[in-house]
Image 1 (cartoon, helix red, strand yellow):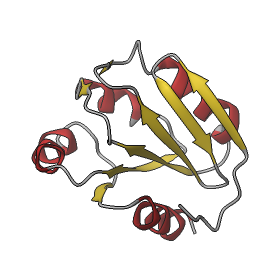
Image 2 (cartoon, rainbow, N blue to C red; image 1 turned 60 degrees about the vertical axis):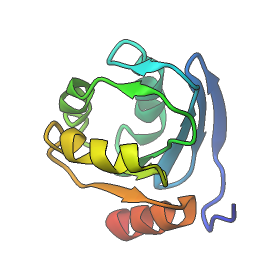
Image 3 (tube, helix red, strand yellow; image 1 turned 90 degrees about the horizontal axis):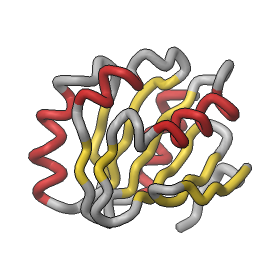
Image 4 (cartoon, rainbow, N blue to C red; image 1 turned 90 degrees about the vertical axis):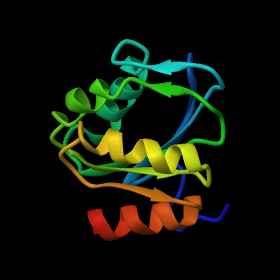
Length: 127
């Protein structure tokens, strides 16, 4: 997938892979995990390393099926530089879950069918 932004760093974490770009980070998480505040700690740490003073968008590619504890969103919403979340999926279940997930997150959260659309949105939000 082509992106205008240059890859800054790629991480392998216990729950998957993360790619960091100038204005966003993209996570590809492992099949069958449950994303909670405890399992997301490495993601939060990476965000803090790269975006402690710079606004960013978190993009998650949900090609693998995994569970998300929606209360996680209440915690990550406290990250001041996190300006939104983009979910990349073409699955009906993710479209349905988005309505529930939005109840726990007080910042923009959008669903996209492609990484390109998600990164375009991230660039629009961050500017």
